[in-house]
Every structure is written in structure tokens, then in C-alpha cells.
Image (tube, rainbow, N blue to C red; front, side, top):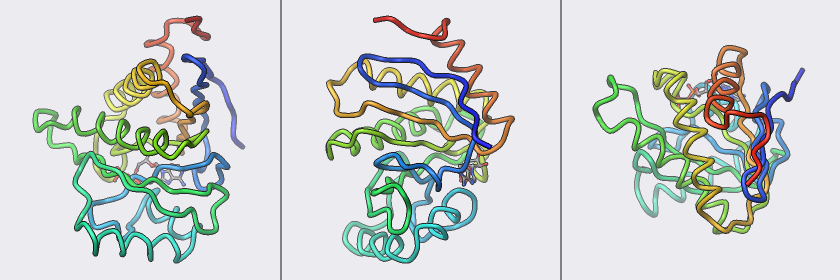
Length: 193
Ligand code: ADP
């Protein structure tokens, strides 16, 4: 059911956009669009906890006991439990309040902090969902351009272990938005540095 259409290379990393279910990905880490409590909820968060099992929530509880709620724009890493991915990186995207409450900076930070954790832990591959565009209401056209622009900028800036970044979009509308955004930003189907 997964169809891969767009792939570009930035430095030594491949950036891919697919339509599918992030809980089925076998990248080293998958990113969870969590909320600050890290207690799980609906959407992609619920799907990850359901598929990954109780070990993930257990670790989330320990993190919150240690450092309190996770602020918007930050990220932490836990086990992947029963998932194919060995790790889950939990990040909190912003709730959309119209766009002038720091939403773009906070969304960029959610992607940057997640990538930083992956790089800091020498991970090779990471999958992202479309953070904030579900229950949190961030308009997908804006979010997709910002997400892809931020990831490309991070990969260009850093010497990194990360060789594969996959955006895993659940529905066809979101998938199309990210595909268009990537084409818009790259301007061609394969970047040559
Ligand atoms: P947020 O609260 O950050 O908006 P949501 O989970 O409500 O997070 O939605 C974020 C995106 O994740 C939406 O596009 C939603 O369709 C998508 N999504 C839901 N389940 C999955 C899944 N299993 N794999 C990938 N994406 C998913």
C-alpha cells in the first residue's frame, strides 16, 4: 500500500516521502507527535503506544518524573518496545493559534531537536510523521514546507550519522502536500551538491 514517489539526496543523506503507517517503519527511530504529558493520546501517538506496547509508556513516565512535562519544541528518546524501530523520539509540536504565537519556530524546533537526538545517538535512519497537522490544527501546506525546509537545512549544516530521513504521511492529502513542498523547495527531483 506504501508508494514511494519522491526522494532527494542532501549531502550524504536520502530524504524520502512516502504514504503509509509510521508504526510499520524499520528506521532506527520513528518520531512521535506527542503531547507534553507524554502519556499517549489519539492520532499517531495512540498508534505508536498501541503497537509499541507498555515499555514505551513506562519510559515516558520515568522521563516526566525526572524532568517534568516536555515543553513544546523539545524532544526525548525512549525504547521502541515492540516496534520494528529500536527507538521512539517523542517531540511536542505547537497547537495552531493562527500563526503569530511562535508556531513556525516551535514546529521547526520539534524537527531540529528530534534530528539532534538522532545525530547525538549516532542513528542512521529516522521517520517523521506530519507533526502538528492533526489534532493540533497546523495548516498542512504551511507545515509541510516548514518541515521539509527545516530537515534539509539541518542535513546541509551538520556532519551527521543520519543517512536516511523518511516522512511517513498517513493520508493522501498530507502526502500530496509534502510531495509538492519538496518539489517546490528542491526544484528538481534530485539534488546535486
Ligand atoms: P498532532 O497532535 O501533532 O496534530 P496527530 O497525531 O493528531 O498529531 O496528527 C499528526 C499527523 O499524523 C496527521 O497527519 C495524522 O493523520 C497522522 N497519523 C495518524 N496516525 C498515523 C500513523 N499511524 N502513521 C503516520 N501518521 C499518522
